[in-house]
Length: 105
Image (cartoon, rainbow, N blue to C red; front, side, top):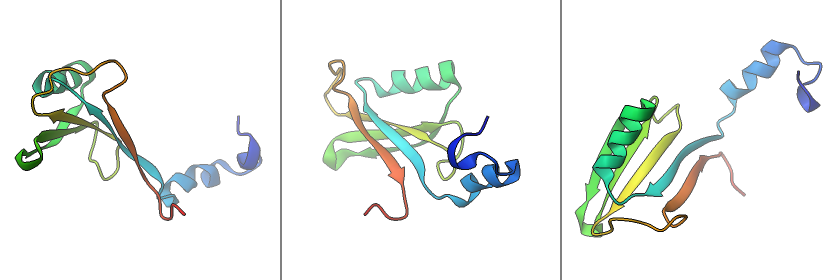
């Protein structure tokens, strides 16, 4: 049941706003100690697809982006492997959330 500002509006109007709204979650970043093993887990256990992978040797890291659909319209998970780091303490692997918004402030 709709509450707040949606109450009393036709369903077509309520369901139209996501098509017009450009704000969305883009991705979340987690640092991992074994990139290939982590990619295997997310693709085989959760059915995600490896969308792209890039190695940045001059900065000593590799990124892999995984998701259920294209990044331009779906949330993605960015896994980052920092060369030489094989594990992280619990809570130390989170990087950031990326959010698309027309005007932050």
